[in-house]
Length: 109
Ligand code: HEC
Image (cartoon, rainbow, N blue to C red; front, side, top):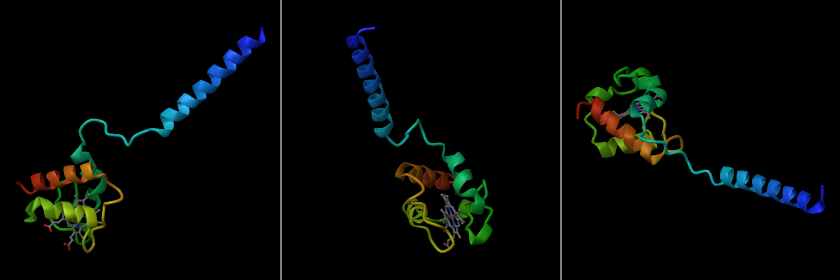
């Protein structure tokens, strides 16, 4: 084995490690396809609102009869209100938008 070969080998190894790191470090937040609002609702909101939105646990309001506008709903999911926690740091803006639309749908609008 000559020296040159070892250098080439070493160089490609270093390049490979760098490329791995580059990929890992430049990873963007995942935006895989459309957001599944129903699954998200069940995961994040059903503990108080139930999977249908009408459970009303821990003082939660019945979403199926909500009169709030989409803007007000979005605001409430983002910043919370009374017994409802803010979801600003837990959900992306896109997820909050999807959940807002889902709440509008639950309340038949
Ligand atoms: C820890 C319990 C809890 C969780 C989890 C929760 N909520 Fe709430 N939610 C409440 C409570 C309590 C209220 C009533 C607040 C008030 O007094 O106005 C409420 C009210 C609402 C309202 C307003 C209904 C109306 O007509 O006033 C909407 C819409 C809503 N929640 C959506 C959501 C969504 C979407 C999620 C998931 C991202 C969620 N909530 C998660 C407790 C919760």
